[in-house]
Length: 49
Image (cartoon, rainbow, N blue to C red; front, side):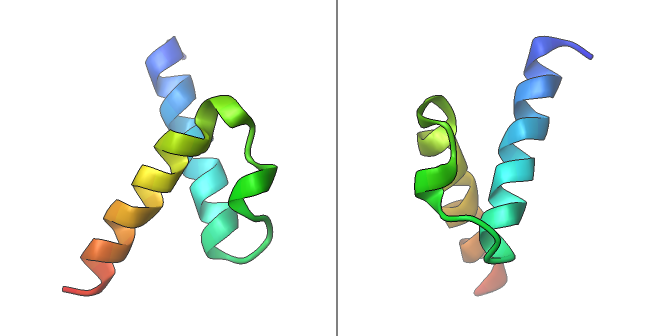
């Protein structure tokens, strides 16, 4: 698995846990928080359509 794939997997993992209510954004490692927040926002936009 290359580093880009590994990062995408981690972002999806954290975003899924947040959406299920298992963790909050504050529990995500700082280096991933901004990207996870953007991913969640983008997904919420899709849910509203």
